[in-house]
Amino acid sequence: MNTPNFTAGKCSDCPIRHRAVCARCNADELVELDAIKYYRTYEAGQTVIWSGDKMGFVGSVVSGVATLTQTMEDGRTQMVGLLLPSDFVGRPGRDGAAYNVVATTDVVMCCFRKKPFEELMSKTPHIAHRLLEMTLDELDAAREWMLVLGRKTAREKIASLLSIIARRNTTPDNDSVSTVFDLPLTREAMADYLGLTLETVSRQVSALKRDGVIQLQGKRHVTVPDMTRLMEEAGDDTDGGFLI
Amino acid sequence: MNTPNFTAGKCSDCPIRHRAVCARCNADELVELDAIKYYRTYEAGQTVIWSGDKMGFVGSVVSGVATLTQTMEDGRTQMVGLLLPSDFVGRPGRDGAAYNVVATTDVVMCCFRKKPFEELMSKTPHIAHRLLEMTLDELDAAREWMLVLGRKTAREKIASLLSIIARRNTTPDNDSVSTVFDLPLTREAMADYLGLTLETVSRQVSALKRDGVIQLQGKRHVTVPDMTRLMEEAGDDTDGGFLI
DNA sequence: GACTAACTTTGACCCAGATCAATTGGGACC
DNA sequence: GGTCCCAATTGATCTGGGTCAAAGTTAGTC
Image (cartoon, rainbow over all chains, first blue to last red):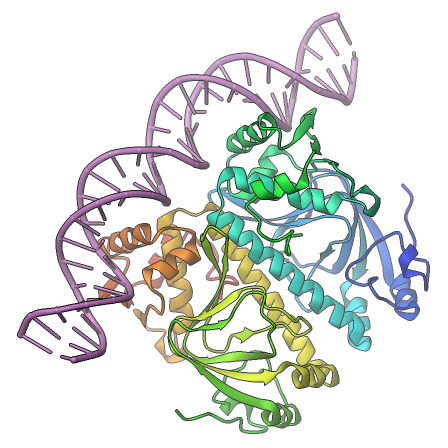
């Protein structure tokens, strides 16, 4: 597989849309980051980090999808974050990982060893500031998701998840009438995200299909003929809010 | 009411245990913060900030309890954060508030106008760093709460909430056999935090009382004879983790 | 000390989603 | 083409927590 590279000073062309370090970045930072970065690949199903393990790097997802999950002793698991391309992983200043990170598709990550990254961060306040902004975004997303988990019906939960994924998959030129994407998650993973069982997920996906809110080609390929309708089903008043 | 004051250079004596700005602070920062701070009080039930409103200040809770809530158009509401003394409110770099902030008891807040606070933050990277750390704590807490909302039973949810409040109310000298505290929330507010109805909260509190996990004097005054037992009921494997 | 209003408890019943179980579908590989 | 395996669907039944309703408790307040 080819390992993409930064083009120093041309952030807009950067193949990796690091929300963490590339956004609004300047050439100097890019060059320095370029010097310490490296790539890692994970296969679908592989665990990237176990909760509690020491985590020696931070980085962002280049391609593929990974999940953050928490598990109780008896096996009940809850997904607490969904990592799509450009999302950041790791906590500068923290040693241990707080969650399991699992690749649900093949994943390429662009990594920085933690020590040099933290040094760079302390030298360039801009990166630290950007990281705070990112963390606030994640916090907003987590809290928005608390509303989904605590108060929405199964149907609304499914619609909410679909609209998050649809929104993240929409390319600028793809804002036409219908939105098309592939579900990067199994029904079980969706259930873990939504606090449901996989059977309920399956039933509600079928129901949304039957009611014409979505169309399915195969099990995973989804067409949303009318995003507004989907978002109504999700019970969202806002046009998306902070969910990642 | 008396307005407490910083003692420049003596952070450990600071009557306001700002986790945001006092922890590990130095005298200079304190003096500068002292110059721009002011106090505000809110009555129980009063709304501190409406979601979407422009928020001109940041600050921390000195005394009392406030909640962050999100509401759907049809009135379903979910609490997404609980602000206890020393907790920070506001997002430097953000204009609008993302949630309703409501005082559930009488509340005193120590505030800083946003502009000067942000200027101070950009001058003293230490404060920015501390703020990132705090935000990461909040994110961990929010994600831990997602597990509660998504996967725990009503009884476990109540036990989880009680053990959070108990932990935050425990003073260092109070690590004896039993823990005692007053619930700062109505049954309805508890229900909004837990994604339950107030009736279910009431029933489960009664059940925990009947089973000897807690004792009640009146409706709000709680005694926990055995914290370990309560935490077992909460289904927690860790000794508390990141919940605030 | 009675009156009011807000909070809380308790009971009876119901339903959305869980659980248990049986198929069905769809690649990958020989 | 066949077969193995895992993901997904679908059905039948059960149940935890919601809903609706009524009564009890507590803190003010006049």
